[in-house]
Length: 178
Image (cartoon, rainbow, N blue to C red; front, side):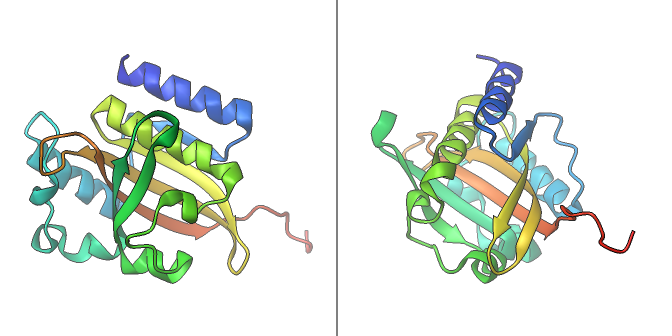
């Protein structure tokens, strides 16, 4: 399946299930930090999928607080994604999740959307841009822009994802003053 077909499938699923996400293969990021991380990923990839070991703290420098690393365990319906790294900016929004599984963090209603997205990234074998809109009870509605890119694990298996998300407040309600 081509990357365009994978994205079309993900966007169709989002529309069908009313997931607040949209995928983009053009990789035109609003955030300069995500553009920088994409550049690092491409350099390390050298035309393929880079290994996890290529992304140490020195390589990630000032981007590390917004970085997360996921590892897929299991297959089919038994698959789960475990956070191997959960940057401090994410920790401030969502709490500590290093070592925890995605299904322990998101609601059951949203789990299928994130599984589909992360599976799609691994299937595409290249980075994707994901735009999402979500609600955190303590913060209100947020817009998010995410880079999700595949990595190989220590055995060369393509089961890991390097990700970075930046959020901003969403203006979802009209101003009462107008």
